[in-house]
Structure formats: structure tokens, C-alpha cells
Image (cartoon, rainbow, N blue to C red; front, side):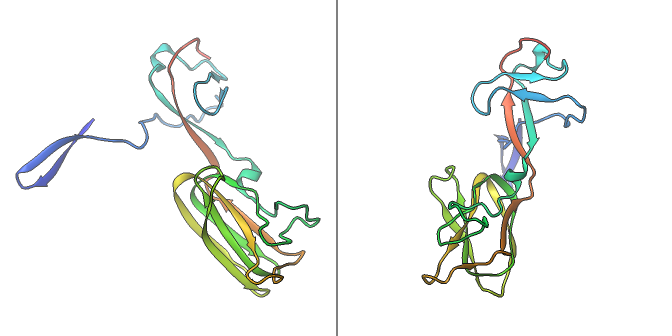
Length: 197
């Protein structure tokens, strides 16, 4: 498809439209489900009811599935074997919250002293950088949110000890990092047809 662009009173040009996503039909609201044999590369897709035809070859399909509970929230999971499951020392981290796109939220509850950094990675956790950090002197909790526009980001929280020996994380303290987008999305292109399912 093309679009007509006006650059000046007498300068008009036709340019190709570059879509971020291919066009899709309305969402399936029946009980039919699709099962993919993989998550990347070439795979087989099996339908729970006969929906495929040879005409689907070359078409794009948007597949979505709900996140599991641990993918939606990464609370109190740290790298060390703390009995209470909360931060016990500097540099302990929550598990990565994967495939973040859209609104994310971080909140704390309870009593804690120290600093917590929210980290983001675009290379599946190989490298990360700090988005923001929050500091409490035992009397403050936070409920912050942000928007991840690029997508496919990984987020986690890290305990920071701004002054050696000052990190205190009481048994009632709870950090929770979550995302509002409760689905994983993927796009597949149908390259062959075997049968209707």
C-alpha cells in the first residue's frame, strides 16, 4: 500500500506505507485454540478444530496467551537463600520479569532501610542499566509506574546498600514488580498447509 505525502505546495510524492504489524482479522472469540511446536523459527501449528485452509499460506496470525502468575509479578525472589525470601544483603535481585511492554509497576510495603534500583535489560539479562532507584530510611514506601515502549525488555529490582551495613529489610517488607499487559504476543506467518487442523 502507498500513501500520498505533501512536502510543499507543489511537491507531492507517493511512498510505501511501512506497518509495524501486518493486518489481522478480528480476534478469535471461540473455544478454538492453537498449539505451537516452538517459540521461534520454523514450527508446526495445530488447531483444536479444523480451521486451516490452503488459502492461509502467506497469511500472518497474531497469537496471544496469558502470562503465568510468576511472569506477571516478580515478588520477593532473591539470589540468595534468605529464609524469609526478602532482600537480606546488597546486590540481591528479584527474578527477571520478562517480555515487558507497556505499563509496569513497582511497589514496596513494610519497613525497610536502604535503596532499591529498578533495572532493565534488552539482551535477556546479559547487561542491564538502572532506570530509577528508591531510597527509604525505614519510614517510606513507594508505588511507581512507567511505560516500556520498546518491548521485549526484562525488568528486575536490586537491593543497594548506599552505605555499607545500612540495608535493613524487615520481615514485613514486600517488594513487588509487575506488568499490566497480561498476555504474551507473537506473530507467525503460515508457510505451508498440511491439513485443516
